[in-house]
Length: 235
Image (spheres, rainbow, N blue to C red):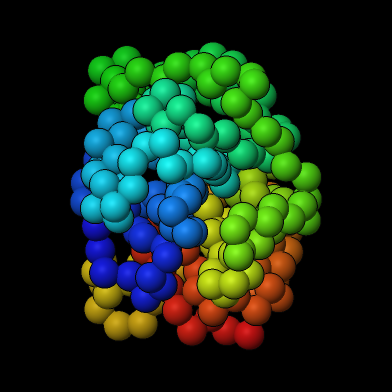
């Protein structure tokens, strides 16, 4: 767990293949908790450890939010919800159905990685009970304690992608739509962003629109799963 610039948003290194390769985010709000991007089932100990270090138990987790259903972001959702009895998964409508029935996502990843590498990276991926999944529409706002979380459907990287704006903290959880953020932990100098163009959904025009939409929120912090919280965004 790294030192973060926002006290109520904690970066959790999920150790996906290597350290500082993929992060989940733990949000804290007056004794309540939520995760954004739940990584894989193998990340569950890291998520629960971050929660414990923040002085919270699994019962405090109310939401397990995914930006999109790619397995390094969503593969651990069922495991996280099994450990957190009060949590509901929030997702883009197109992503929600794959949480409930992950067979197609599993088959696609298995074809790419092979059975052995798939098992090492992702562990077991189980369906999420339908009653614990909630789809959110574009620009929907969720009042969570003293914070408003706003869900923005942001295409380009994938047709089922969304970003989450935390208005109070002036932070936006960008998923993969803002690219890979190569910060000083990876390379010296100012942050350098590399577009992620995973097939088959990538759409360059939509990706450009998404970048403009993210910047138009006025957020001061971009919380990237790959990797960390980036500051001083261009306005």
